[in-house]
Length: 179
Ligand code: IMP
Ligand code: MG
Image 1 (cartoon, protein in one colour):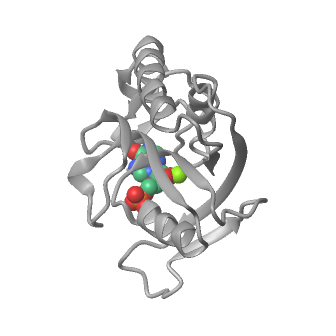
Image 2: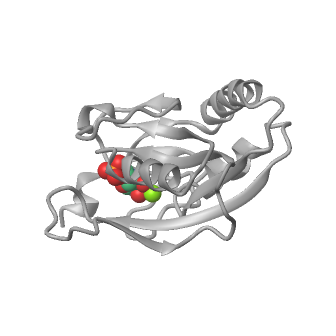
């Protein structure tokens, strides 16, 4: 285990089997469609790569990078798009693939944006859900794991751009971010 971690929350095996299980459900629900899988950079990349390889529906891949200023921010723009999609979503079935839903602010904004742009449907798939912290009225359509209110890293998730390449998900020691 990485020395900055307090404990491993989800092992490689746990992640693999649950991601496969959820992907099969999504695949079934999307049967007959040709969806666009939208990955939210950078946190979702490892989940995204594992997840889409379990789908059998024909798929287009696209990516967005956003940063949220949070509900308490003075900014009225709120969600900042740092990299937009390459393709047009009008009339398309969109599957948003995200690492974690926390306050729900990011996904609530994204869902609204994609709907306004004319997407035929928006399905939200998250790897992790910190449901205790939700402030926005949004629920992922599919979630792999409910987790406690702790800061987690690994399998794509970072703290200051570190730990993304760990193959498992662990709780970061408080001493790492409180120093
Ligand atoms: P929300 O807009 O509050 O739902 O925030 C979601 C975003 O916050 C995620 O996409 C992550 O980038 C980040 N985030 C929230 N909790 C964690 C965590 O425990 N570890 C790493 N990133 C997190
Ligand atoms: Mg993110």
